[in-house]
Image (cartoon, rainbow, N blue to C red; front, side, top):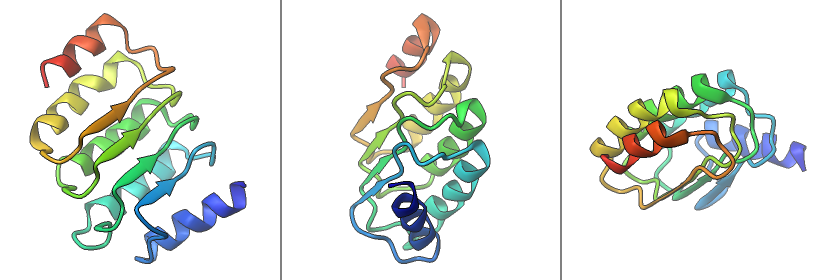
Length: 127
């Protein structure tokens, strides 16, 4: 439920991660909430137990992607990131590609349901 997902985010931000999977699918994560989440993902040790992050079906768009991208540049524990149907388009993917070149641990990235187009696909392929 939405209340459970809000509680999971609150626990994460308090340094008490609920486990390896932080699922915020359909949790109403906005660009502003993605920025807060990004701060938590950048704190060494704070996010160490989170290996999978599911942000699917949240409409945070490019501004939210930019925040998550900044976290990916320094977070070295996240292995899987699901950004399905998050209103992302090709404009934010060049920065994501830069972050992916710096991040050596992320193994799975899902962007299903986003309008990334050929330009976005090319940016990611070169990462």
